Image (cartoon, rainbow, N blue to C red; front, side, top):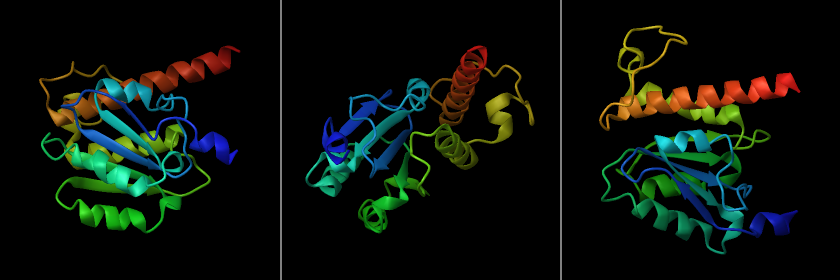
Length: 180
């Protein structure tokens, strides 16, 4: 199994370069086929997602540093997501990139970073930081009402749209599973 985790690209990237960024540090090495996990793909219309597969490179932290330096001149918020197995090096990484990384979330095993609950928790965190309920839905507690179209590059509306896309994707997956 370890051989499979080291195969494939060390970094998998998708999403618009001017959108807010989520950098995922994956100590388990998911995404060895060159694609993001399916649960993250609906977000890439609205967010940049860079998935750093630690087992796929000999110097993983140097490579993560290089990935983060790509965001220095972009002027977009950078949210870091890490598996707890990445250890104390995550704190060192945040200190090295102080001022660039806007927030950090870690997730403990056994839940893999590709799990839908992880994606939802990341979106909740991003929405809590950048968006009020009124800026996402037009009014508080909008529930499942239709949300306004993506607004001209506003971080809040991008995250709201990403959350809506993820909910729709998860709902379609559950419907397919129920129907057999």
